[in-house]
Length: 126
Image (tube, rainbow, N blue to C red; front, side):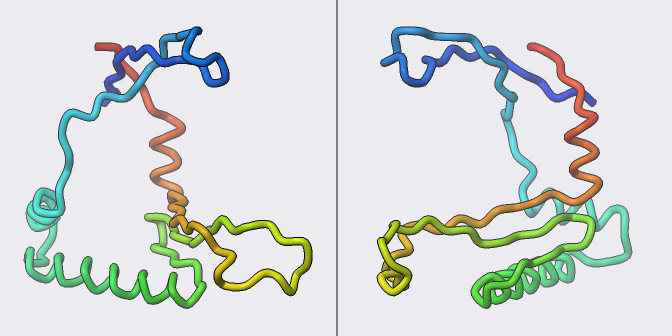
């Protein structure tokens, strides 16, 4: 199946909005919710929806705990999560404290199957 794209016009950075270009942008007109995923998994397995959700919520709890402990959380072929941060620059190492951290991000690195889908993606303009 092809990923639908649309055309969007955006200003070029550092031109003050005076120069504009056209870009391809993915069409995302709906979403696959946890409820939809649960029902789809139920149809293709012997696991009940309640059990599927219980595992997902338990996995989320354990992922949060792992990230809080400074670990990379690997979900097998699905991918992995890790914390990155932005901090203030200081002149000496002693000046760096926990208060130096200004922002954190959680990065997701896709696994093999997701990377393959991304690499082989086909597109159709609408």
